[in-house]
Length: 119
Length: 164
Image 1 (cartoon, rainbow over the protein chains, first blue to last red):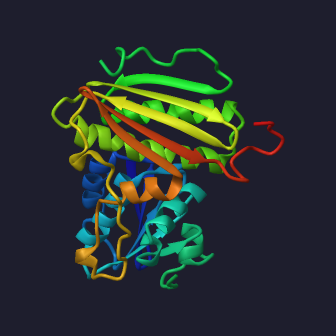
Image 2 (image 1 turned 90 degrees about the vertical axis):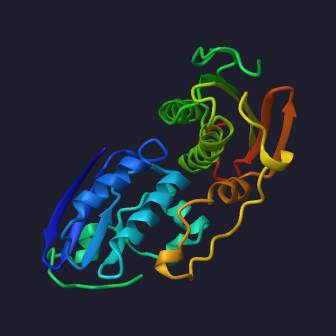
């Protein structure tokens, strides 16, 4: 598991590089995210592209990082596979987060600076 | 004992059955689920069917590791999966602590409209299991937990062209 951070304009994109977000990595993910998000821009986008599987521990970790970011940041998600998307919908947590098809869609095709959209 | 020592997958009746044994720790659950995923694909399940089964098993097995076997980390767990018609029957056996109240939790729908700080970070597991299965039974047999789960595969559970 690795977390990559990239700041683009007013957004910080944090990409989780792994194929699963499950109980075995949930704690490491939370700790890694906390580090990666230090000094993040106002808008924080978690890129889950490439994650084929997420269980409820993984979902709990996503909720946890959203809470630890605090109200100074907007937190959004991008790149959910159909299976990952289903976990958000079944638990109704899809209504908590703005969810984008991809980072490019979230930031605008020019990789733009301040394009904003909520789900 | 409820489960023979961990011995990986027995290669018996490969077309319809998956049997595995592993120690109750998270990374072994992940490893076993990767195997299950590959085997279900060989059995002809669609991606949607595989996702459903993997999620149900992940939630049930995470509970074994985090609750039943919290005091007996690494105890043997045995999983038997059988594909019958339009569903999968799964039996999970472990020698951990019994379920509180001797029955599986109901599972509650979370309320997503609460303030950010009050959002739940857990407790989704049984809700997911209950929404993806159509029969659940639990019994305590001696010092063992037996959890049976029937997972319907539905119209889209098999890959196109597969005979099931």
